[in-house]
Length: 236
Image (tube, rainbow, N blue to C red):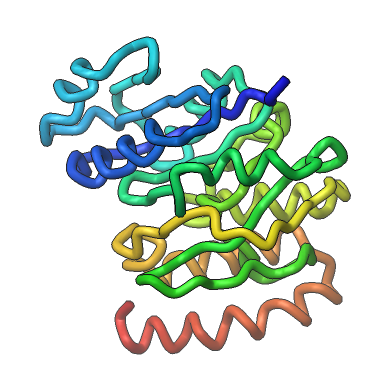
């Protein structure tokens, strides 16, 4: 039997981007999916549009939240799939059979399965599993066992990089990562992680200082501090 896959989209005041993502998710050929949309009480008509969706196909919630990771935690709490993937408003799957392609592989020994991302038409290859100063894949391209997201909610103290902390935690726990040679998603480059680069780097710095040994901090922090200073100088 095909494992059930939950797709979660979180959004706020991004109705047109949400519609694009919703079309992509609902067009997936995979036979055992669950789709959850968590809206942060948008004022652009999103709550009203959500009410027009088939409740048999889309679980939706619209209420105030404490940011993107709070919304993602709400989605994970509602999820009933064995696997979960977070597909933000504006992001789309690379093909209509992407989920099917992923689960044609033997994932029985994996906790986290991930692949490549396409940005502005160019495929960016994911890295091999390792302890890093940044994510070595995009969270739009990773399927995680849902139980892990329920046991380890995203840390709301890290408004920009809680997903980075989550996957560093998974690495520290020696969870099993499986890298696929497959493009999973087309990434929307207008998101906050791309428009507030300095804030994201500062959050990564805080997470490395919080989680890594002194030896690892000495190895990882130079990769963050230099671009952070440059971004601050350029006001990015």
